Length: 499
Image (cartoon, rainbow, N blue to C red; front, side):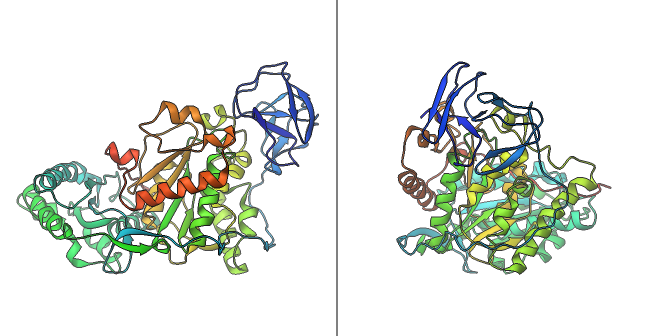
């Protein structure tokens, strides 16, 4: 298969490989088309003449308006298409009766995880060192090295000792300060963390006490706090605390639990024109399967819902949830406007090079990660999942910030689709899924799973089975590429004034 018309309503098709001008393209459900331009893989061409001002239809929906007449067979991209989106929008709740995620034929499954005292389940047994302020970043990195050496020396039952550095925790105000403290508290209570050392300086305006106050339902035997200005030798004292935590957490063992104890984050980054055709739909199938098993999935990247938000709104379980989603969407648009930014200039240079033209184009491909399940929960930034099923989380599209928000929501694993590739890793295992074969073959040290085989005729149900097994293997302890490389990152959503 060289090209695909994703939906019968589409007036464009997508190249699945590089095509040359003059080639004659035959599709079963469209007239033959002679290409007037070279078309790179992932890019679009017109299947019919399109007049200026008319909609460009892809995924069965408008992805923008033609800015000039486009002839049949011509390349369709940023030079002749503009967004059709508006600013604040009035929405009407039109619930759909057809939702996935409730397939009774899906067989029950289990995995072996670490059951914590509050009932949450971790898929890793790690020691996390969390600084309250950037001023102690080098201290926590040094402590992580000492903890890792101690763990290795005594063969402790600990996966890794990780320091999560960040540039915030001081000189912040209001909501921005509160959000930083909440994210740090959420990470400190994450079930993948067998034990946590929280390190402060002592004079920051988000001190250890502020983070501790936001940590609800945590096991005091598994958390230690240290204020460096109160210690004669903070390295010596920090090492002592780490040894205590490692010794305690080393007693943890895996036990069999139901897959309904799993929470999975859904994220894409460095997308290309195949992301919405291969990797993201595949994640949608896996998400529906997980939700059918009682698990939870979290979709974030609010700006990358713009243009596809109505599809998500109509899947909300009730009107109250629909109104919360309307507030989330319009609230994020106001955030752009308040900062003098163009709401719809979202696709990155890499996205555009890969064939994504407008924000609608990106969003309609991006949101396919959510499958067809009913939306059961809306989470504020820094919120944790409480309702099983599909949850939508307030966070930007930026990879480190969005993935940290997913981890803070207590996702134990993140499924990350990409068409361009990235070595980035979240605080939790971040499984990279390529949208195309070339990326998988070139970057085997980054990519864990290849969805590109769908363009070679691989059955999506068969590939769903394979990816589901890969997820379960990860939950049982198999490391993903980023973990094998020792990559762990975090980033906080900075929105306010810095003093």
